[in-house]
Image 1 (cartoon, one colour):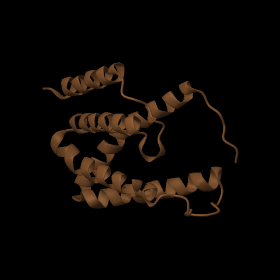
Image 2 (tube, rainbow, N blue to C red):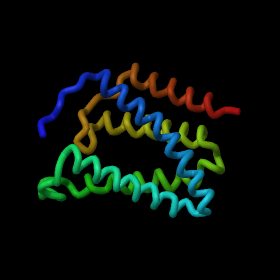
Image 3 (cartoon, one colour):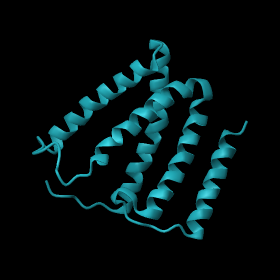
Length: 152
């Protein structure tokens, strides 16, 4: 299937909705973990439902894959799921104790720091984008914003 070209506005809107979904997912899974009295069971259910949705999407829009692995693919590319598991388990456990807003705000701060590091060094195949004063001030302002949002 050929790659469809989209513009930056489409990407921005798509990622905005993905961002909107993160606190919703956190609240739903935290609630499920509380009802089931097991954050791990709630995370397992989330991953099971997500796996079914991913497989359905793949089959509907991409078809059956020709290969599940590639000799040319570094092994660490397959480890992204570990970060998802850590995030889902931690947000499911922390959010009811710390608040959805607080938990997601600190996740956002972590994402900002991580993305600056990945961009600065072009890690894991990402395009390299140097840290400029403008980007650094933007990160600082966003960090201050995170703290202002969670401040009581």
